[in-house]
Image (cartoon, rainbow, N blue to C red; front, side, top):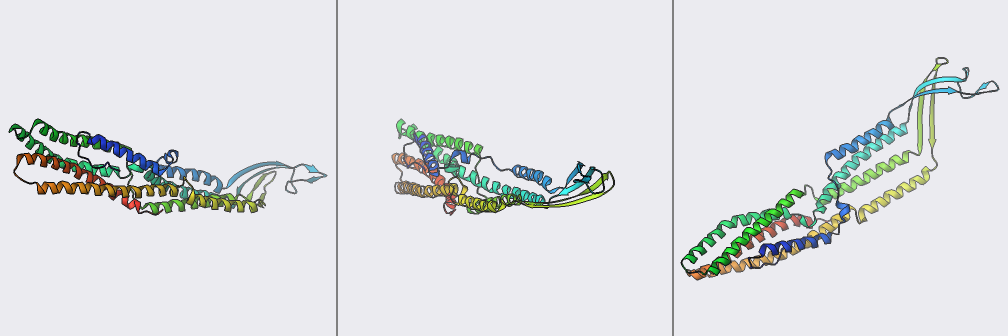
Length: 376
């Protein structure tokens, strides 16, 4: 993830930036997440309100009684009136209400589907935004840690440069010696500027915090999908049935009333039931094994986090080993020699840079390690 530790100061920032970008590209490639799958809008509460309002729109029409006005004229055959109420003329005006308990149940299924879809969208959006970060996950916190370490190191770096300037004035250090230390100090400034710029870019994009364990959010998502598909299936199965109640008044040609119960069932419901069961089983299989489903995307993301943590631990070991060498030299070579102080200043400048890198790697491990332990 990070470049190997080197001591050349003049191009440290450029080399580190190139190495970080290369590692991020490699990690993103390992995720194998299709861009079109991840390019999703966030799921604000307004989206759930939209789902609920659309569901109420459909449910209100299904659950409310229907007002009917009918003008009926039945022909007569052989003096016998057809279709009209006996004892009346062949023309009637009817006004009444009709109500379907089956449609009322379908309306409940529509509302339940909207609730499940809202839960699915919220869970899916949280996981999509997490996975979409790819190699950038935790990078913002790690950058803040390194920036803080560098900012804390600058006063000590300035003191080392000031001491070198005094040695130059006294003729102890050469101009090249002073310029080498000054170049390392400027390299710290360059790195700090690049890190701040990169952090501002990440903050503009918006980082995602893990508010709940991803495995728990995944379980919520899949449960909501199954609930939504189940409600949709129940609503479709109800369409095979017909139960309608009608009642009303006949003001013309004379006051009267009428009532009617209509019951029906489609023989296609037998085949429909098998098809619906097949559809639910297929959707369940897709949830568990679909290449573009959240479980698969999260699995690839977690695998990439595990590999990243392993590489970061190796990098941390290399940084710690180099820091140990620097500290050992600083402790062993303490003395009053002015020339020795120049060498120690270079080692001290390297130590400051290494400490900032260690802060970066350590914070990145802290952010990614919990995800590496997830078992989707």
